[in-house]
Length: 369
Image (cartoon, rainbow, N blue to C red; front, side, top):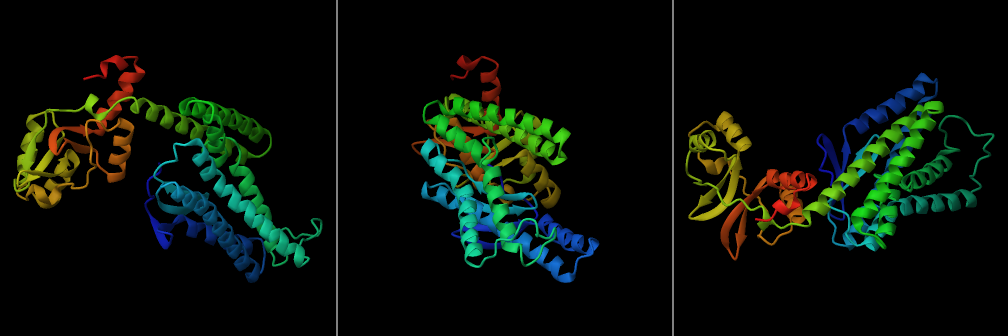
């Protein structure tokens, strides 16, 4: 899944989910405001344009919260929601494995936008606020504010339901297909459908609107990325940590100086080491920590000062796809592996990447130590 984006400003927390706005969002607000001035509009219209963008992104936020809170029902954690000039991103740790659960999570976002549209329609209907399309001003005004917001929410729901990754419609299609097919096959069909539609967008964009070209490229790349992610997950789910466990490893005491780790790094093939305190494994260090520590702390600083202490609990029976998810979540590229409390080996992300390469080379029978 997507990692939290840098340069984002926290604006609040809803149901334990951090809400952030990327700094470029401020540029969008400024651009909208000054665009009104360039078109000769009054100050009120410029401010109303900014308010409309804020209202629009409130709807985008509610869309993403629809996904996140539905996912929460199925024990899927959403770390944060980031608002960008091009929309919003809910950083969910994963999508549900069960097709029916993925279907509800995927539909929740567009359902929120449709719900907002229905509420706005009844408000406009009751207040006789639905404008005559022929009389509508081309610029933002108080008379068409709610109607424009209604139209945008309908468009958001419709666009997101296009059956192509990375839109919600791609996940809806995958979930429906997965009720009858293997998840990997369902993903492949949904991705190919999305890429076919993307090519159509590109051709239409060439002869009509250049934005369709960008949308087509976005959809094509997103569909390919989802297909690749799912095929990789499928490969890793066939194997366990024990199949690629590394049993040659070095343990360094935490009170040793950094220069000791430098010696080990230069004199062998290992790029990461376990760190112990009182005969217990407390973490690890990698080449990156060693180089950074050497530069910032000096060669005599103890290894405990650069030790990464956050690592997942892995056993030889842990499936590799689960192991990779746990390591990503912990931010660990290296991890000890225990069985019944006893250290039996180590695992790193390079090992996992090699499994995929070997499998794709047609040598899956070799992954069986």
